Amino acid sequence: MKYSYDLHIHSCLSPCGDMDMTPNNIVNMASLLGLDLIAVSDHNSALNLPAVFTAAKEAGLTVVPAIEANSAEEVHVLCLFETLEDALACSDEFYEHLPPVMNRPDIFGEQVIMDQNDKPVGTVDKLLINALDLGLDRLLETVKKYRGLAIPAHVDKTSYSILANLGYIPPEYGFTCIEVKNPEAAAEFGGHRITDSDAHYLEDIAEPVRFLNLHEKSARAVLEKLRSK
Image (cartoon, rainbow, N blue to C red):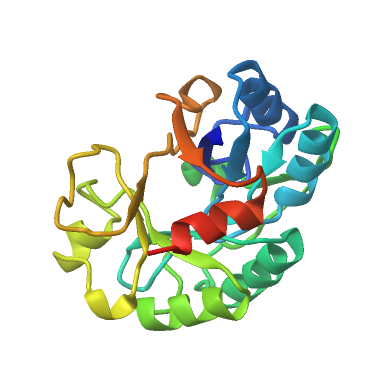
């Protein structure tokens, strides 16, 4: 069965995310657009996912737990997980690998943690958009430890992508899926391709709408599909 998706959305936890990108606003916009599956994938952190899950449950929307990690090579990797618990545990480990550079909200933007009512309950001190001190090898090992799936993000962008920074997609990493903005990009890649919005503003969510063929509407089914050969 076909399910509409957007697996790369930033909340107000990401300093580059608009402050209107609250858990409930994201869920409500996705519902208005008729989406079946979303992933809120903030930079190097999953701390807004508990609120997103609560809001999505009330709306009947399925959430795939996610993080957009930034490797030491400045390659962005979309990390999808089967459970919220795995995403949060990986998020905690990623935080330990962020450099000790504190966020400057006046320069980079706020990094706000919210509850299920969109009430701010805290902020993250370290600057989340920095690169982790994990090279791609170790980043992929970390994601695998938490049963996650690593997907090179927006590979056809001219910055923060595996093609821009490494020049190719190393086959030894065993990627089964890539994320592209242009469906014609990286034509030599033989695995799955997904196209997401990478939305930082509400109006950009699911633009355009895409679909996945899945046997059920669940995070597990998404990971099984994108892991398959």
